[in-house]
Length: 80
Image (cartoon, one colour):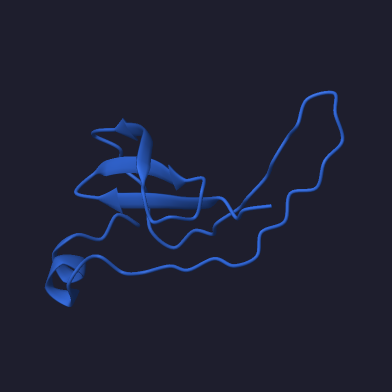
């Protein structure tokens, strides 16, 4: 068994999802969507499905990082 790593990156209104399915730090982009406007002050949620089969999906850890500076945050508040 190998851990599957998923990176979800939202920067400059672009949402990108990449995977490292072999745990070798070799990332492959699954998809990228430009012009995505996500609001602030919300929560993360995770789910999985296997179709008709039964299988376990365990989330071992979640790491989040801030990609913007405090100046960028002051000039753009999407909560309004």
